[in-house]
Length: 580
Image 1: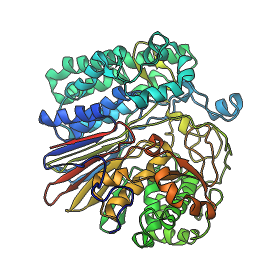
Image 2 (image 1 turned 90 degrees about the vertical axis):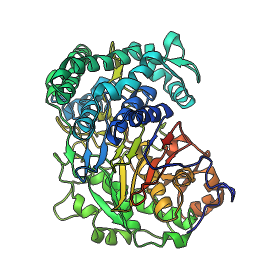
Image 3 (image 1 turned 45 degrees about the vertical axis):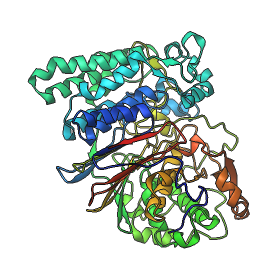
């Protein structure tokens, strides 16, 4: 297999892969990894640990993840021998209308309460725990309550993003009180407290404890009711009613997550699973299909030919995302065709070895399928404000696997006073344009960027993997997957390799900025191949080495024949892995 030129010969990676046989976690923040691992030490399984880690991300990275946000999950249950996804994605309130945004806001979805969709993460965590876990909500929430109540040490990336969004967050008194106490943003190492958030989580635990005499199921139901029908829901909805929002108690009470069989494709001996087209997950599957017939190993890892070919394949997939992906309850998404071998064969002809597409390529065409293109908004000079995510994955010695990408930022909607929570502003990933596959409609899910992955070689290997990064997610996931499966890199080496990402499509976040031919490459790779790629027509932009915008891959690769695993976490952010 080809080897990288970016590490000294004796150093396969800057961090060691975490190896063991019992259980492992990799998460977007070291304290979330700690929370998850403590569940294993207390006798819990991978689902218990994953839920604990996911809830903790909503505390220790609350600028990127809200407990009242989104949380798409993929689970392999060893007991049931099944792979399922939980969408963890809320719906637009019943009162929303597309006219509201088209007429009153010029076809834009403004920051603030009008971006709100029903918060889905709590139901996702509770559903996963109830179906596949063994522990109580009190057990898995205990580290998070402690982190929020007693505080954590502020870390550099959080301070950086709070500084970037200082003005936006200062417009809401309740948000400023948390992230700008005394008018100052907490600096790295300073104690960061979220006492209202701790009380909200403790309230749910108290409701569970009161009902638990009737059994674990009754306790978990009480937790859910506390959030969706109880005091928290009432506080959210009263604030919306008083401040021009649309969320109601009816929206909250009627919501439930969807449990699905996730789509997958095969790449050699490896089956790759993502969530459905209500998120961008199938971009990874489509791109894998396009790349099947290329000798990527022969091109050389991260050579100009390699990067160009992958980039052009990604562009084709993102063109289809733009036209076809949306909530399948509202839109006829031709997913089976989009991820088929025959479709990939036809689309592959659009990849030119010596010339990049100068803009987003045409989408595919299906007889009677899809919708007409609504065009794109070109905002080449638009500021790219960080809107981000996190990730957690776990495996255990029983064969269970958990992969989740919780999200929702605290920068574009207010903390609901007294709760410590921002309610999902994921409506920012819809379009206020009639006819778009992901246009605003009552009860519809926005098209989500968070998309956990799972790679499996039946009887041989399991690998949950994922990353934050908005539209970069599927791209970083693809590169890490190819690093392990094609080039034989160990897990940690695979996530540390230099990364690249195209932006030649409408961004998923409002205002859906579009940067034709834009290709971002980390400096250590740019120095080798940047000029070659410019010559093929790519608008190449150099990222600094180890830039956090390139994502923060986490993965665990487990040999199911021996039980041995290797867990990896990306040093581009505060991600960490633990295992035994």
